Image (tube, rainbow, N blue to C red; front, side, top):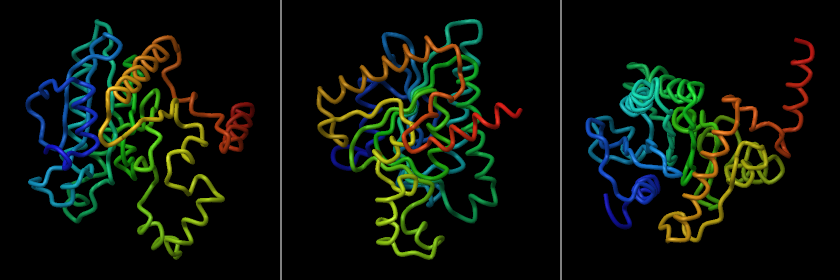
Length: 268
């Protein structure tokens, strides 16, 4: 994949790792590259489109059976290799359009594959590995839950092509018995129903939102900005004694959630 046909995930993982060779033994749809962040060893992971994929439902950057288990293996390898040594950072470069929807995926246990990937990221975070999610494109549905959402810190590019939601608009319209236009009007008043990254940021889930010149074709300024943000996130995680996700609470549009958690904690 090259030039204009390259996905954002492929573009950014290649740029951030200075074109380093991928780790061997992984499918074309999962790019695993060992490089650096903040001058320290780091493993970068991305899910990429693969037009020749044996599962047709995952040829456009979706996360399917092979992708879920491959992500889990790539993360567990780092955790196992670093036992008794400094824990490497893990950066999930996120540009995933959806989980794979298909009869074969359901029959062969896609829920287990994606849960395995999510559990691997969570295990790495709890074991002291700084895990950073970098949203450069779409972060949709179960694909984002499996790849990136379990990070200590989430960083996103402030760009209209960076979208986050539980499902695509057409699917959401069918489920809610609304039109896409109605959903778009609803999103203007109810941020959790929106797709744009600024609405997502208002929920308090992002650590940083970065303004870049071109999210699809980053220049030297964009690359430097993202590298600096990754390094700052790495240092922030290292200085934080808590490996949980409490840093995501307190967003402008998540005050009720915070109050409920406080009440439950007090009662407990």
